[in-house]
Image (tube, rainbow, N blue to C red; front, side, top):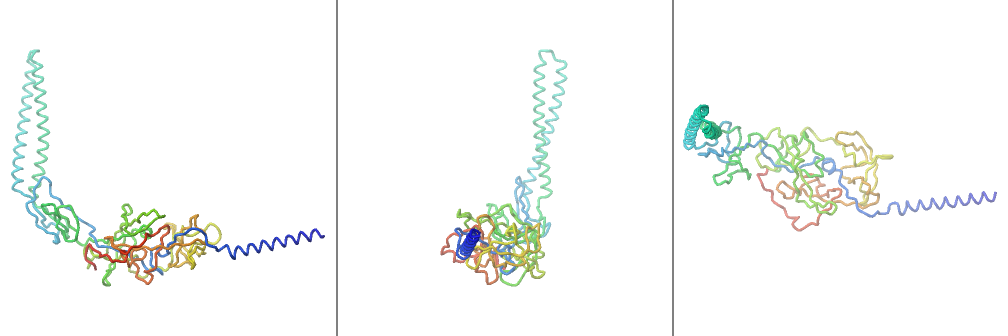
Length: 442
């Protein structure tokens, strides 16, 4: 009995020590900071909307969707050009004409050359027939010379036939040019540029066209926007957008008809991925307009995601790969008020398997910041928030931007967070405003 009491007492002591150790660990060590830094990104930036779900805006510029380039025939000489840069033209309006006088002389000479070749071929064939008759009557010692004469004459005939083919093609083209010595506009539109005889372009919108005449089809404008690689996943072809004037309340509706993911351009913003100093890439996307009334070529505008049919849904759609669902309740790695990583439980709603997103019903807001859940992330690690200043098309910085290019709320000054990105040190030039060029603002 004494032995049983001793065993029981020992177990109680060990249990008390174990509980005390566990309590001490939870109290003093479980929440202790972990070494390393986790780079987090705001939920607003990840989802491509502004703070509190406001629509995101991107910088855009009005461009021509359908551009017609016309070059004269390299074999002909332009006599006169009837249009200048900025002129309005209609379909079948004359643009320029060729020098018909010199062309007619060349055409007449071609006809003489063709006639001479045809006569030469006819004479050569007759000569070959006579030589063949002589060959049949010739003595053996003469046949070799006659055969050589036949081969020589047949070779000359083939040369003239080849030359005749080229002359006839030239004459056919020149006849067509004579009958169409005036080149007409194929569309209604505006002449954007005309190349002068010295090779320089006389344009009205700062373009650098290399064609002889460039025409922008009327009522065929589009809006080109740029999006960073961090938010390009939020855009889709067919997505409705609004075009907003930068200076007044004018707006236009449209939709994204093309996203150019094949050709990226390097941003001048200072991003550093893992300290390697690599610049972030930006991609162009294009908007088809329902109407372009009141817009000017080269005009700078804002592109706002979402149509003009009311406010966007207040549901928070988050990419599913940010949510950890391996065991138990789903959670995300979020930044707490002390600037450290915590596991935050979230309540999931509807899923979109095609888009790879899920609705967050509870646990997150657009102002929260979360990390990508890779193996290196641990609870208690320090979070790093980095800022991003977007750019206009000409490379100047657009300080009005949130996460894509612009934000209109009070949170515009809030640093945007991009996982795995470190900013370069700021310079005095960062505070200087750079002018935006390239066209009128409206």
